Length: 383
Length: 216
Image (cartoon, rainbow over all chains, first blue to last red; front, side, top):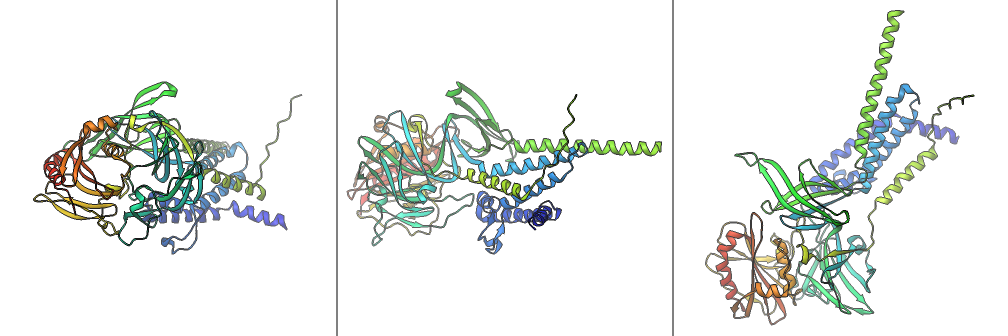
C-alpha cells in the first residue's frame, strides 16, 4: 500500500505535467512581481513574491494565498532532480546528465543567492575615504563609545532586535538598553501645546511627537525607524531617549567617564579595508546629454594585506574584492558623489558553472546524436 | 586476476530521500535568516578620517533637512519663539515635521534656507557643526578649529554664532549656518545651503535675517 503511494508520488514528482504547471506558476510570479514593483519597490516585490514560500495578503492577488517563488523553485529543483535520476546512467546519455546537472546547479545558485546574498551600497564623495558599506533598508541603533580620541567602539543593535522590545545587553559595556517602544516607520514633529507628554525624558525627544506610519518598501522611500530606549548602567537609569533616523542632531550620555552616543541609522558593515574616491567621471557623447561612461577611480587600502592600489570601477566592470562585488550603480551631488552597489553572494560562481555544464552537455549530446546518425547512415549504405 | 568492472547502479530517489532534500533546503533557508545579535566594531574615529557619507537614498525628512510636503501639521511655536524680519523678495513658508520654517529666496539656482528649533542643547555646537560639515563632505573640526571658524552677528536675542563652509570638489556646495540658544532652553538653527554661487548671492540677505532675530 505504502509502496504504491510512494511509487505514485515518485511518478508525479518526475512528471512533465508537474514541470509545465510549475513553469506556468513561475511565469505568473514573474508577471505579478514585475507589476508589484511599482508600489513595493524592487526588493520589496522580490521578497514578497520570489523569495517567499507562500505569497500572502497581496492586493494584486486579491489577498489570496499563492505559491511563492521559493516553493515553486524548490519543487522545480526536486522535479528536475527526479527527472535527472530517471535518465539512464550510460555514456549515451552523458550529455543529458550534464545538461540536467547544469540546471540543478543553476537552481541551487538562485537558492544560495536568495538566502545568503547581501545587498548593500557604498556612497563615497570625491576625496573621501570610506571603510563601511550600508544597507538600503535595514536599520541599526548604534551605541558608540566615543571616549577614545583615536578609536570609536561601535555597538550595533539591529532593528529586528529592537522590534522585539525588552532589555538588550550591550556586550563589553556595562550598558543595558531597555527598548520601551519601537516604530518601524514614524513621522516626527515638534510637540504642540496639549500634546500627550513624550515618552522621552532626556535628549531632543522630550519635545518631539512621534506618529506611527505604515512601513514603506518602494525604492525611493525609506522608513523613518524610531524607538524610545532607556540606557541603564551600573543600576542607574540615564533617562528615556528618542532615537530616530529622522533626528540628525547627535545625542549622548556619560557613564563613569565614558561617553556614549546614540544614533539610529542605516545598518553598517565595517570593512577591514578602505576606499578613497580619487575621481568620478560621467562622460557624455559629444553634443548630447546621453551618458557614455560612468567610472570611479578608487584607491583601495588594505593594511592586513599591506596593499594600496588604484582600481577603476565602471559600467559592467565591477571590482571583486574579499568576497564582495562593487558595481558602479549611481551618482549624485553634481558628479562628486559616486554610489557603488555592493553584492556579497557566496554562490556567485554557480551560474557560470551551470552555463559551462549546460553548454558542455549540449555539445556532448549533439556529438553523440551526430555520431549515431552518421553510423545509421553508414549502416544503411552498407546494408 | 583483474577485478571485474563494477556495474553501474542507478540511484533511486525514495520519498525519504525527497524529504531529506526538502529538509536540507529549509535548513539553508534558516542559515540565510539575519541575526538579531548585537555586533561590535572598533573603527578609526570618523571625525579623524572622514565624514559620514550620505545614504544612497536619503531619508525624506532628516531633522532640519526636511523639505518635502508633510501630512504632519506645521510645528507649534515654542515659548519665547524667535522672530525675524525678511529682506525684500524673501517670503516665509510654513514648516512641517521637525522644520519650523522655510524661506523662499528671490535667487535662482540650487538654494534652500531653513529654520529648525530643537529642545535643549541638541547635542552641542561642535557635534552639530561637524554633522553639517559631514553633509558637504568636509572633515570634522576640533574645539579650537571650531572657535576659529566661528563669527558672530549681534542681534536682539544675543550673539548669533555663524559658520560658513564650502565643500571641495568640482561643484562646490556651501553652507551658511546661524546657531543661537534662546532663554527658554531651545536651540535654533538657521541654515542657508546649496550650490556655492547662489548661496554667495543670498548670503548678505541671510546675514540681515540673522541680525534681525528677536524674541516674540
